[in-house]
Image 1: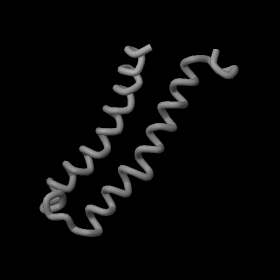
Image 2: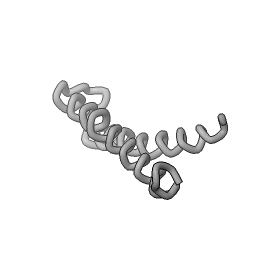
Image 3: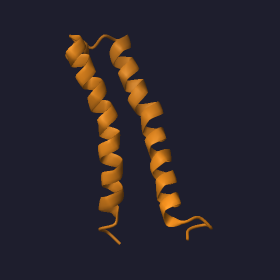
Length: 75
C-alpha cells in the first residue's frame, strides 16, 4: 500500500495524471499551433495533418507507459 491506496489504484492514477499532463498542455497546444501558423510541413494536406495529429496522440500512449516500465529496471 502506498499512502493508504492499493498499488494498482496508485499506478493507474499516476498514469491518468501523466496522460492528462501530456495531452492538455503539450499535445493540444502543439496541434493548435501547427494549425494556427499553417506549418506546411505538417499540414500540407489533410492526410499529412491527420498523421501529425495521430503521431502526437499515440506518442503519449507509447512513451509514458514505456518510461514507467523502464523505470523499474533502475532500482
